[in-house]
Every structure is written in structure tokens, then in C-alpha cells.
Image 1 (spheres, rainbow, N blue to C red):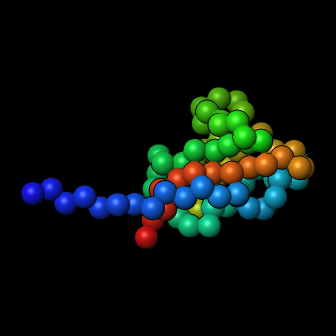
Image 2 (tube, helix red, strand yellow):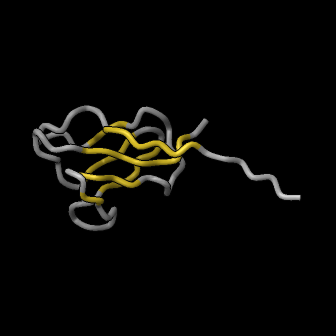
Length: 81
């Protein structure tokens, strides 16, 4: 008999709001490594590309380019309990 543990999948805006300078953003909850997807202005980013991002662990995400003021920046991830 297999036991399946469900993880909660969240989609939310990252904080702080983009300002054209800041490259480090926060999720509300810790995430499981490898489960993060990022959208900038509704377009999903590819982590490895020059316009992508890196998972720093815990609750932090580092963008490779600083999003401009007024950009929408959201994440989807599996939250840790």
C-alpha cells in the first residue's frame, strides 16, 4: 500500500513590488526546491535563460534581471508545511 502525501500548490504575487532595481523577491511560504515557476507580466519565465530566475531556498527567489516598476511578478510553487 502506497501513501500519498498531498502538497499545497500556491500561486501568488511576489514581494516586494518590482521597482527596477531589486532582484530578490519573497514568497509567503517556504517552497520545495524545483517546484517554483515565475510569471512576469503574465509570461512564464524559463529559469535558465538570461531573463530567468534562481531559487535561493527558503522563501527567496532571485531574478537575473530586475523587473521594472509596474511589472507584475508572480510565482507558483509547492509550499512546505
